[in-house]
Image 1 (tube, one colour):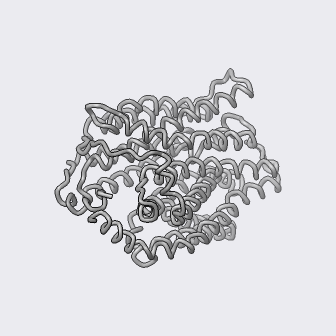
Image 2: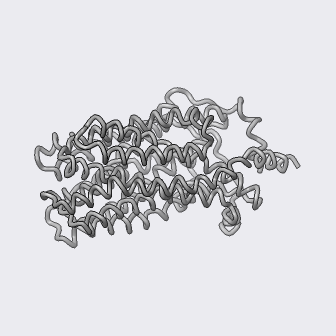
Image 3: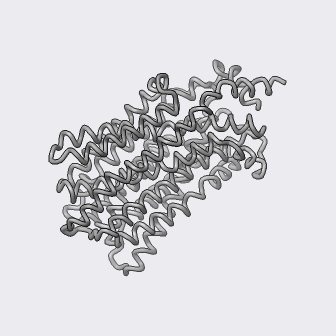
Length: 458
C-alpha cells in the first residue's frame, strides 16, 4: 500500500532520463513491433499462400501454439524479477535476447524446401512457438524496466509516450513495407522474399537493441516483498471490473487479429487488388497512432468505458461501410480509416484501465497483485486472443472451400467476406455491451483511491 502514499513524494524528485535514454526506450518497442507485427499481419497468409499449408491446418496450428505460448508471460515476469545483474533486472535482457529474437523470427519466415507435409507442420509449430516465447521475454523486459528508469511520474509518462510512438513507427514500417520488400527482394519467389525481408529487419533489430541496452540505465532497482501466488488470487475474487475488462480485452485481440489477418485475403481475392494491402496497413498504423495521441482528450468527454464503446462502434460502422462501398476504393479507404481509429481506442484503453482494476482488487481484498492482474489482463489476452483470432477465419474460409493461390468460387469469396466484414462486427458488439456494465465501477474509482490512501496513512 506504500505505493499509493509515496507517489506524491517522488513526483518532482525522481531521475529524469536524457534524450539518449528516451530514444533508447523508443527503440525497444520499435524493434519489438518491427518484427512481431509481421506475424500479426502476414503469418496466416505466409503459411497458406507461401509455405503451402492447408488453411484448416494453419488455423488449428495458430490456435494451439498461441494458447501454449500465452502461458509464458507470468513465467517471464518471474524470471525478470529474479534476475541479478550489475546492469539491473530488465536491461540485460535486451542484450541477451536481441540475437535469439531476430534469429527465431527469421526462421519462422524461412521455409526449407526439403520438408515433407508433416515436416512443414512440425517446423512451423516449433519456429512459431520459439519466436513467441522469445518475443514475450523482450516485451516483458520493455514493460518491467519503466518503473526502474525513473521514479518521477511525469518522466514515466514521457517515456511511455516515447515507447508508444516507437511501437507505432515499428508497426508502420513492418505492415507497410513488408510485402513490397518481399516482392522486390524475392523477384517472384515469395519464400525467398520473406526470408530476406525478415532477415534484414532482424539485423536492424539486433543493432538497435544493443544500442538501447547501452544507453538505458536502471535507477530504482529494489527488492520488493513478493506476494505468494495463492494470496495474489485473492485480488481476482469478486474483482468484477477486472473480470469484465479481461473478458473484453480478450475479445478485442480476437477482433484485431481477425481484421489484420484477413485484410490481405479480402484485398487479393474480393477486391482483386493485393497491392492495396500495404496501403491499408500503413493507414491503420498511422491512424492508430493518432488515436493513441488523442485518447486522453476523448476520455474527458466519454469516460473510459465510453471510449471503449465508441471504438467498438467505429469498427462496426467501418466494416458495414466497406461492405456497402462496392467498387469505390475511396469510400473503402475512408471506412477502413474510421475502423482503424476505433481499433486504436479499443487496443490502447485496456492497458491504462488495468491499473484501476488493481486498485479495486486491493480495495476489496487487501492484496495489491499488480503483476498477476496485469500479466493476465495484457499478455495472456493478446496471445490467446491472437490465436483464436487466427483460427476463426481459417475455419470459416476452409468451410467455404478456400484454396490458396486459386480462382475462388462464389462460396469461398463469401467465406472471405464473412471473415473480414462480419466477424469483426459481431466481435465489436461483444466488446461494447459488457463495457456498459463497467460504467458503475468506473464511477467508484476516485472513492476507491481515496480509501486506499487513507488506509496507507493509518
